[in-house]
Image 1 (cartoon, rainbow, N blue to C red):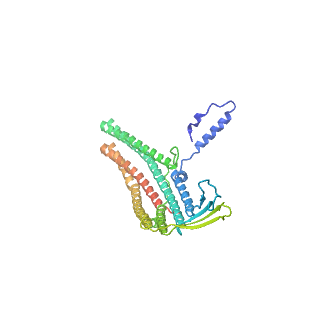
Image 2: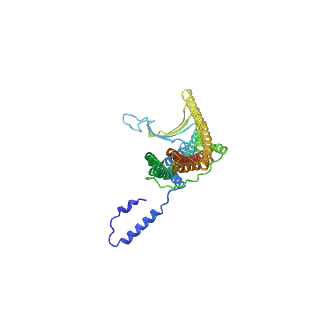
Image 3: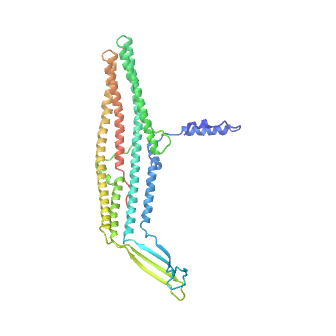
Amino acid sequence: MDTNILGRFTPPAPGSSRLLAGVLLLLSATTAGAAPLSLQSAEAIALRQNPGLGALTQKIAELQHQAVAVAQLPDPHLALGVVNAPLNNFSMNQQQMSMLSVGLSQTFPSFGKLGLEGQQAGVEAQAAADTLRGQSAELVLLLRRAWLQALYAEDAVATVRHQEQLQAESVQAALALYRSAQGSQADVLRAQLARDSLANDISKLQAERASDLAQIAQILDLPEPPSIEKQWPNLPPPPTLAQAEARLSGQPLLRSAQAQTRAAQIGVQVAKRGYWPEVTVSVDYGQDFYPGSPNWLSAGVNLSLPIFPGDRQDQDVAAARAKALQAQYRYDDQHLALTQQARATFARYEALKAQLERTERQLLPTARNAFSATLAAYAAGRAELSAVLRTQKEVLDYALTRLQYRRDLDLSAAELDFLTTQGATQP
C-alpha cells in the first residue's frame, strides 16, 4: 500500500467531508490489516508470476502443437498450366494437343517417418514439462535461500544490538574504575571503541538484508521489496540419505534429461527412414479445345532415389546416433552430479545439526558465563580490560555462529527438498 496516497488528495469540495472520511477510514484499515508476507505465500506468488516459468509454459504449448503438426502429411500441391499453346496467335482451338491442365499431387514421406517425428516431438514436450517442474523447484529453492539470508541478517542485527548493551556494561565498568583512580583513560577509550565499532557491523548486516529483500522482490516480480514474516519457517524434514538417493530418479530435471535421451533415440529411427524413398502421386486433367479432340487424363508416381547413402543417409544416421549418445552421457553426468550433491548436502545437514545443538547447549552459555565472570573480575580489579573485550567478542561470535548454523541447517534442508522433488507420473 502506498502510504503517500493521502498526500495526493485535493481539498474536499463542500459537502464531501463524509465521503473523504470514509475513504480515509478504509485506507487506514487496509494499511493496518496488511500482514507480512509468509514464505508459503511467497512461494505461491513466485510459481504464479515468475516470467521465466511463464516462458517455459509457452514452450511446452509450442512443442505440443508441433507434435500434432509434424505427424501430418505434407500439404497437397495444385498445378495449373497451359499445354502446347501456339506462339503465333495463342489460339487454344487451332490444333490438337493445345489444352489447359489442372493437376493435384500428394507426397507421402518414408513409411513410419511421420509417426516417429510426432512421437519425438511429444517426448520433447514431456521433457519441457519436466524442465518446468524442475525449474519451479529451483525457483522455490532460490527464494528460500534469499528468505533465510534475510531472516539471518534480521536476527544478526538484533544480536549485535544486544552485544552493544554488553559493551555498554564494559564501558560503565571502565568508567567506574577510572573515576576511582583504579583504571586508565585508555581502558575507557578501548571499551568505547569496541562498542562504537559494532555500528559498522549493523550497517553491513542491514545492507545485506536489503539486498536479500531486493532478490526476493525480483523472484516474486514485485516492484518493491516486500515485508516478510520475521519468524523462521518450518521447512519439511529431510529424508534419510537412502530415501533421497532412491527419489533422485524422479527428480524433474533428471527426468527431463532422460526424456531428451529418449527423443534423441527416436531421432535415430527417424534418420533411418531416410533410406526409404518418398512417394509422390499425381493426377492431371487436360481440357482440349480443338473440335472433336478428347480431353486428357494423366497419372503418375514419383519416387525419390536414395542411391548415394554414404554421403547423406549414412551421415544423418551417424549424426543422430552421436546426438543420442551425447544425451545419454549428459543424463549419466547429471545423475552422478545429483547423487554427489545429495550425499554432500545430507552430510552437511547432519554436521550442522550437531554443531547447532552443541553451540546452543554448551558453547554459547559458556561464553556468556565467561563474560559475566570476567566483567565482575575486572570491576573488582582482578582482571584486565583486554580479557573483558575478548570474552565479549566470543559471546558475539558464538551468537552469530549459532544463527549461521541455523540458517545453513535450513538451507541444507531446502536443498534436500529440491533434490527429492518428484515430477508427475508419466503415462
